[in-house]
Amino acid sequence: MASLQQPDNYETLKSKIDTAAIVGHTTDNTAKIWVRAYMTGRWTLIVSVQKLLEDAYDLSGKSLAAMKAANSDIVFMEEREFTRETDLTMTFEVDNLEPDTRYYYYLASDKLDLERCIEMGGEHDYWFRTLPKNPQSLQFGFYSCHDPFSVKPNSEGAWDKFYDVLNERRADFVIGGGDQVYCDTNHASRMQDVWVWLKNNKNALLAAYSTPDGNLDEPAIIDYFTKLYRTYYRIYWQFEHLLSVYRRFPQYMIWDDHEIMDGWGSLTADARKAKLANFFQDDDEDANYALVMLMFKAAARAYLEYQHAHNPDSMIVNGDPDASHWDYKFDQGAYGFYMLDVRGHHDCELPDGQRLLGAEQFERFKSWINSAATKKKKAIFICSPVPVVHWTESAVNTLDFGGQKDDFMDEWGHETNHKERNAMLELLLARSAESSIPIVILSGDVHCASAFQITNGKTYPRARLFNVTSSAISRKPAPGIATAAMQKSADIDGFDGGRFEQMFRFAGENNFALINADCRDADLKISATLYWAEPGSESVTQKVIKLVG
Image (cartoon, helix red, strand yellow):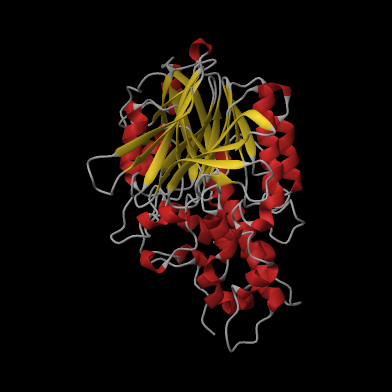
């Protein structure tokens, strides 16, 4: 039997991030700052309203405490112990900030034996801006599907253009709409698919982590798997312009299937067992299933460490992703936001009407959208990583076989999800019509772009509901011919009175979106600008889609 490699040796030939930063949930007076350090020890995050004048290598001979005492511009300084337990990641919660103000931040240490004391921010290029007190206008970026290894040569796709547009348009924040990493890579990536690895190494793993009484040492296996998942984050996020976007603009993230497994939730229990089955081998199906579910726990742990930790707070039960709430909400002035989780509780074997979100999440979302506070919003933005409408529904329901089955069963438009989709559309159309609130659903997943208005003129003639999809920022895009498979303007199958009105469709190049909302002078305008460009090109093409006003 082959020996089991140490998880720290997984994908050693690939470059990986060491020190990195992400600005997370930011308001007019708070910000979350996520940091990964390159070594264990006590590190300090410093936030200053002005650039630090201290030398980036030796702090001008001062201790951190002395530097803070002598510098009234420092508004936050907190020391934390970075350990391997969270893969050297840490999220700081900064408060007492001023609205609409630029802040510089630094990672430093005077407790470690280092050649330079300020590890991050020495050139004053780590900074963010708080939001205004009650913003009446917002501009925010949206992207999905980051996979620079799906093409040859490897390419960061449109990340450089994304950074330029965000910077030029002075964007307030960015939403990552799913598939921020791909743990189940394709052959073009020359990288290990973590599920193929598990299939090939499961016997060695079971031998190494079985207790004398024949049970699995589940905590040890989860630790092992988590190190594998962390490796993908460190590899996928080591691209220059991605890191520039992450450290400069507040980020809101939600996962999709590739942070776990392709089609997660659209595979039956038997199909998940079959993922690890080997021909001509007497497999233990119960052991296969146990390993699959332990992998899910590891994927959730890595997702928490690298993505969800810097999102707005939600109920997280460590070690139990099924009990955790991965969906979350936040407000930005006159606008309400809700990030739907279509993976953490997605299960195609649940009762009809509960398969994508699960019953509890749907009730949380329903309570939020019907709340008095939400009814007063000027507009609502909802992130559903999988679009409510994109592909032609006849194709979704007739081509769902073979290797495409789980992809199409992910879709809201698949017939197995129609009951849940219809309940969601009823909820959104009713809220939009009754409160005169435009609602925009933002989606990714499908590796091309589109925009639709969703109507029901018979029941909700005053409703304004849209679905805008932008994908993929760096994954190999669907070919241009894919536009033929996109939904045309048509009645909604299985939803009485409902209709899809196609506003735009595009495929063939990497793309991203910028959403503009402005309600100054009580005149609400909302638009989505889609940008696309060939990797390495100097030009970028844009299409402005007017949604409201």
